[in-house]
Length: 238
Image 1 (cartoon, one colour):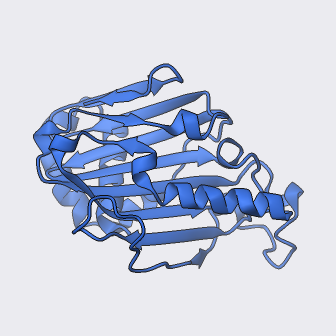
Image 2 (cartoon, rainbow, N blue to C red; image 1 turned 30 degrees about the vertical axis):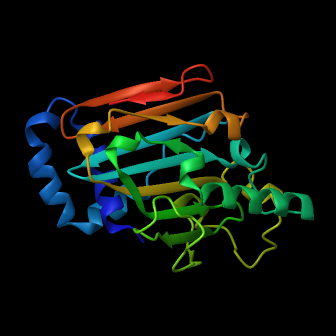
């Protein structure tokens, strides 16, 4: 799990709920959030509306720490929103999980910022259950994705909207889970020279052409912004 990442996401929720107070209360809210993991966990369970063709990036910076979170419909990522039903779909899912394990293939951060990927978390709900893939990264090698210290698979209860489902049923029942499966990906970085992190570029549209727009919510120590990215606009400026 990424407790720091959850705390940073909770800061983003604070930003959405209190847009006029964020500048003067940010420092106070950070201290409060870091001491209340329940708040972070509750915020983590909340999702924006599930819209095909639309992906959300949440980006939060706190000191030298940076969190990038992606929430994407399964239809955008693998072309379906249920458990894989054949070898082709399973191979597609495996390929996507491999792509997500290489953060530098999705986001490019300026080299002068000296950002190092510390942890990543990849989760999906294609089969009505929550599957996590957590990775610690070797800090001695920038973006070394071949050296994973651990691979944890966890099975948790789905969100409230699925609580009424009988999980003893065949998880390949497309009708039961259609319209709900999505991916959540978190990348947590430590940047030695944060003032040089003035932008980041994304290759998301090239990797996942089913996506038409990306909403990017950005919160840093100095500013906040909400951007919409399209295929011809893929840079997020801080």
